[in-house]
Amino acid sequence: MERLAESKVVSVTETGVQLSKLGKQSLHKLLRQLSIKKILPLPESDLVIGSAAMSIHVIGAYRPGMTGVPQRDEAIKAGAEGTITVAAMGRKLVIPPDNKNLAVLAPRENARLREGFEPSDKDLVVIGFGKDSSRALAGALAAVLSLQER
Image (cartoon, rainbow, N blue to C red; front, side, top):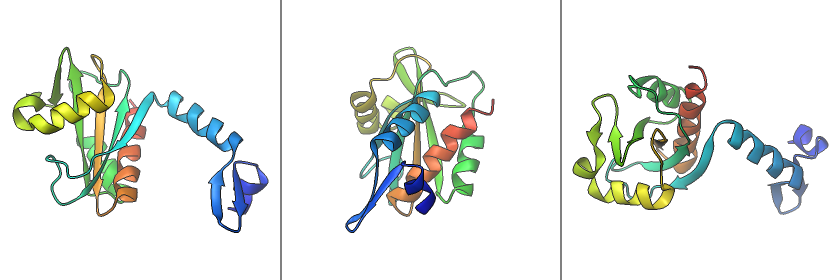
């Protein structure tokens, strides 16, 4: 924390630590570089029953042949229980690699993801899940970072 405070990324007060204006700018720049458009919690998800879930919208990250397995593995290494990768293909949300239609598998989640993110063709929604929302988010972010290694 001291290093972050010295570099003016965070401000430390008696009530806690928060991102400074510079810290917020740096975070937004990093999210843009990773093509992350939005991050949302997914409370009481039909896709991950009994776990906290966080979802990340990644612009244009879908690639033919994706399985989601490398992303899941990275999420587990980061402390999450796993991830589910959802791809926008045309007007449908599907789950690679077999591209099952999310509207058939989980209609409520299909509607929530569409409403929350408004994904376009070839976008991904990476859903991390874990014991708590912090681990779920760490897993989802690790999964998104693994997409950059292609």
